[in-house]
Image 1 (cartoon, rainbow, N blue to C red):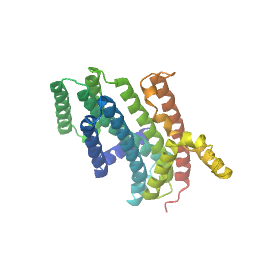
Image 2: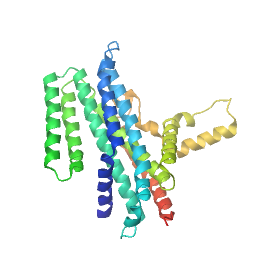
Image 3: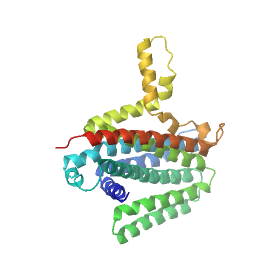
Image 4: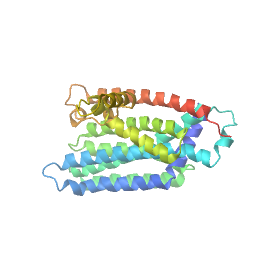
Length: 307
């Protein structure tokens, strides 16, 4: 377990230093801030615009982060030949792959937490929280990050607890308003569940393919997964029966990612199932599917010849 932890931590350190990830974080932050201006164009639906567009953008950018990291980090170890130094050591290939997976997921979770904190902060401002309090919280979080970065030996590790503190502080702000705090937190948890699945799928392809093809294949799985319900219920008479059977078969194989983007009714607790019960069931499905994908990835990676 210690070997998996060490690889996961090193993977996290490598990922957070990547300029592409920093660029995605900056762009996603700009989109969330832009929702404040965009909400003013709506008629009496400002809160819903901020929440819906913000959460949709977090989901999209989190998917891109998971796909990018899953497609590139394992390949980099092979390309730079660092893998040839690691594998002769007393570590199984499956342990190495699991370490990479947990490092990718940890990076994506920190990304979701930071974006979620910004989403809640923007939502609180739109909902009418005291602006001086909001700015004080933002300034305090920035000061805390700067201080801990200055004092810490491992600056990248600081991001993990800081992201959780930021999410808690932003939740406190949003909780002082009439914003749908529970719905936002539930959707952030579901986004993390989708990341679990896609990171595992990306590692399956990355175990035998190039980063470009891995990215294409994983995005294809994501698109099919988001359309799984439609594929399952396809009944058009204009489509040949063999094609229908193929589509229905694909719907059974690909992950049903619709579970991680439920309707507003479920998130607000207005449906037949409580929101957190739904989140728990969906996350359970995500963990199970990711575990199956990791087994496949381990088998492929174990059989791959690096000589």
